[in-house]
Structure formats: structure tokens, C-alpha cells
Length: 157
Length: 317
Length: 146
Image (cartoon, rainbow over all chains, first blue to last red):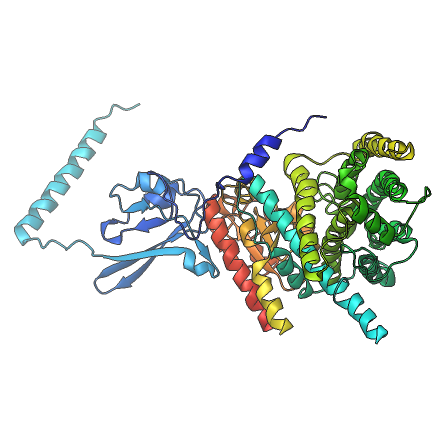
């Protein structure tokens, strides 16, 4: 019955321990670490791609009608997120990015939701003069008639 | 007047308070040294005190399938027998109660805390506890044999008239005159055997088959919670102190200096060194032994060491 | 005087019991690595116990599946008061990608009261240490209110 590790045990008794003292010394994470999400609402265009690719369906959107347009609120639920960063990859305007914050400890689950809202104005309506309106109607009628002629010229089957 | 002095002995000085404080400190030192050997920081030395007071603040649940009276009385029985044992062990020339047959009394009293664990586990009514107590019974049978042989060896060596002595006063007188037991070369195998018996009796790694944490959900203590569990952990800590003090009295005794305080400090120092050598070092370097391997280890290697010493002492060396 | 000592000791020696109700084992590995020498949690008094009757903090990981629902309820009933329940990872409460599946019984809120949530998939060991330290403080508050 050999006795392994005796030498290591005694030398380690007198050397410095290799523990990282966490709450006193914060740890730096490497680049490319996917932590808590940060949303920039001024860059979002409300395309909805992030909601389509999110696997746990953690993104929801609510629309309220206000007098200036639509008030759109995007809500990202960090408790349900898998941190796969598909939403950040698919967003065409780079309005979602995953930061380096890793410590998300809460007692109330509402604190885990990241919200951002912006106002989307409807595009302005263009006013047309009466000649432009008549020209538009004539062009439409001509197109309809040509289609009928072509239909009639089909040989009888 | 004598009643007050006896009460002081039982409750304060070598009795309950002294044993509890020193035992919990020794348990804390053991955990810290094991952590440092494993290259990590480890808990503070007063951590067992926090554990004990926290357990006093938890709710005590008694399961439906357990027998109430025995469930509650088992840990208290262990505590009482340990405190009584502490009154018989000398501190370099000062004993609270001494008699003619101290060693026999200690041998009988040492089985009661182990029996308290068995009885407590049997009263729990859980199958995990059943497995745990059968392993504890095998462990008791394994380590009792070398322990008895070591005590007989020391008794024979210290007898001045050719017979055998069982009294601590005579053992201390012999060591005061001829030097401590460890300085005679024929007693060294017995000392090594005693050092190997200590971790199994206390129930520490690598011989803690009875209280195997991960395998059988903590064995006999599986249904205990709250203050009853606190008393079991206190028993574990006091047993560490009692056994190391017994080692110091048997093998490193003597007259000491005349002052009580210096003797007590010297005893604490010896207890700490023996704890580190015999309990922390094996804990840090080895895994847990199986029941049959532990039995074989005690009845072959350790018994042979003790018997060598006995034979040498009987031949007169 | 004893009451104050007991209250203070509650936060300094919390014992942990871990239940896995069907998770992928990622959060379990990160929890066990908190006990290793690099992130040593024992310096704050944490200890893994083998039975729920000895525990103060119960750490639950995994979405609650149909097969483990009954065992979870029975185990949680054996933990003595005062106790704190911590949900680890993003599986227990909002069920991550397993929402609406035929064998997932739903968020942990339906079976017990959850005190602390540690989010992440999987949470870093430093975040788990933060969560356990917060749970120890909540344990002390619960004891004081009793």
C-alpha cells in the first residue's frame, strides 16, 4: 500500500494558496464573452427578425398607438435567454449587443427584463395634383385592356 | 465544599466547557490544515462554533417512522459518556478523579459514543441508516483489538512490581522517573499503532465508512436535524480532544511543570501536533477505504505492530 | 445574548443541498466547480451535504419534468425551517427552450417560493458565489423575523 502525494501535501502546506478571492478582486473576462444584453432603441427599425430567430422566444414587442406614430417597446427577458447571440448576428442595424457583464442575481424576476422603446413615425402621405391623378387612371385602364386582348387571342382549346 | 469542587470539575475545568471549547478548536484546526494542504484557503478556525450555533437555531423534525424516546436520548447519552471520560484523563500530574482501574473504565466508556451512533441510526427508521450502522459495527470490531493490545502494553511497561497496572497515577509516576514512554525503543511500534487507531475511532477520512457522505446520504445521521444534530457534531469534536489527550497521557506523560496553566498549554500543543499528524495528513492524501479493506488493514498491519510491542515488553525490554 | 449569536451564525455557515430536476448538467458542473480550490466557497462556510434534512439553502436546477415533480415536492418538504430556495440558471423559472413541452411541468413558482434567481446559461462560478452570498443574508433576515 503505497502512500502517494505526501510530498505534495507537505510542500503545499507552506506555499501560497491558489484561490482567487472573488468578491474583493473582480475578474476580467476575455473578448467575445456573451453576457448581459444591451439594446439601443434609436437604431432599431422594427423588422422583427430577432423575434423570429430567438430559440427560447425570449423577445416580445408591444405596440401602442400615440399621436406621433407608434410607440414600440421591445422587451428582452434575461431569465429565459440562452446567450447564443443569434439576435445580435441577425440584426441588420446592430442595435443589439451582448456586453461583458456576467453577474445577474436578483430576488425579483422583473429586474431581469431589459426594455427599450422608441417611436416610429408613419411615412408622410404624398399629395397628387388632378392631371397626375387622371394620367395614373388612364395608364391603369390601358394596362387592364391589354390584358383582356391578350386573353381573347388564345386559340380555342 | 467538596461538592462545589466536584461540580466545578464536572462542568468547567476538565469537564463540559473545557472539552467543548478545545474540541471545537481542534476540529477547526483540522479543517484549515486539510484545506491548506489542498492548496486552497479553507474556513476560519472558529468555523465549528458557527456550525454548532447555527444548528441550535434550526427546527428539529422527528420523522413519523422513528421511535421518539430513543431518537432524542441517543446523542445525549454519547455526550454524557464523553464528559465523564474527560474527568479521568490526567493533565501531566493533575487528575480530577483517579482510581485503581482507570484504563478499564476508559476502555468501556470509549465504546458508548460509537454505540450511541448505532442506536440513533437504528431509531431513525430509514434504510440508509441501516446500511450505515452495519458498517459502523464492523468498524468498531476492527479497531477495538489493536486498542486493547496497546493499553495492555503500556500497563505492563509501567508496572513497577512485575505485574500489570491500570491506574493513571502509576503510569504518570513511571514516566516522571524513567522518561516518557516514547523514549523507550520497544514502545515505538505501539505508538504508531495508536496513531493509526485514532482516525478510525473519531470517524475521519479515510476510515469514515460509517458516515460516508456521498454514498449513503450520511449514514446513521440521515434523519437528524436541528439541535440533536448539533449535539452529534459536538460529540465528534470532543472525541478528537479525548483521544489525542489519551495519547499524550499514555506516551508523552511525565510530571510536567508544577503550574497548572503551563501544563494545560503544553497539553494543547501536543494535541494539535497529534491531530495534524494522524488526522489531517491521511485526510488530505487518500480516498475512502472500503469496509472489508479497512477490516483487513486493522487486523493485520496495526495488530501486528501492537503485538510486537507487547512481546518485547513481556520479554523485559 | 444567545439569540444574537445564533442570528449571526446563520449567515456564516449555510449548508447547501442540490437537486437536479432534469437539467442538462451544465449548471451542476458549474456549481460543483465552486467548491474546487480555485473559487473556494468553503472559506465563507459553505458545505455540500448529503441529505436534505441537514440543509439550509436548496439549489434547484433544471426545468421541472413530469417524472421528477413528485420527488421534488417530497424532498422540499423535508428541509427544516428557516430555509432559502435558489433557482440556478435559466431553466427553473422561465424554462428556457423547453417552454410548452409535453413533459415539462412548468416554472418552479408553482411548487415553492423562490427567493433568489441566478440567471445565465450557464452562470459563471463567480455569479453563483454572488447568488449564494445573497441567499445567506436572506437566511439571516428570515431567522431574525421569526
